[in-house]
Length: 302
Image (cartoon, rainbow, N blue to C red; front, side, top):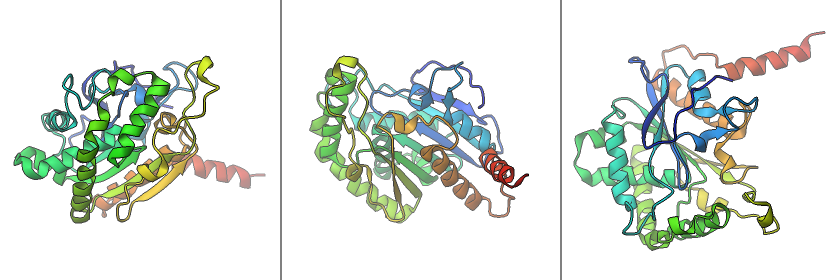
């Protein structure tokens, strides 16, 4: 496992790996969701421990031709659809600005999203159609892949997700107005499907298969909570695989190792896109492939 220097969970676009390479063929941007953050969302275990695994950095190590970034934004201490904080429409404009001012969108772009982060990417896409901004339009025009992990694609399910997360994370006051956006989110998905049908980016989705674990011992007697049901996490897009995983909503994007379903699947997903961008380039043998090959060879050795 590669070491990664601890970076504070702050707002902004954080470089993770290979971002200073001017010859990189694509950019990969991780976008967290509600109550998430730029680094902790994607981190398994504490840094310095034997079980630590920060998969954006690991992915960058296996894909040296790709720049890897993590986008941080305020997603835990404001009501998403209330007067006290940025509505989702305004936050999408802000995130598009953060990306374009750092040159994201100048080359092929892949988004890896968790939960509400997927809705943010969808909002960025849909608003770009009428924004009339050249840089924003170029960013969306260069999207070649999107991974949705536990994203609630239907408005009614977003409100339900907010209530379920509040039970576990005890953040009801952060998301009390989320339900008021259900009509907007239903329209958002319809327009996103229309864009997807024309633009045809590769898409893949992962869904939680078990309820979230309770963070406090005195709450563990309550039933397990599914933040986003599989039906809601399936965007039902043409050509999009929807893969169920034996993880809860939060652990879904905290893979502990290279063999985890989400890590291995996303790596394969990105490799296929990169090879499509450079069909004449020789594919690089990833460390995951070499590890699997070594394990296979050991079974054949006397």
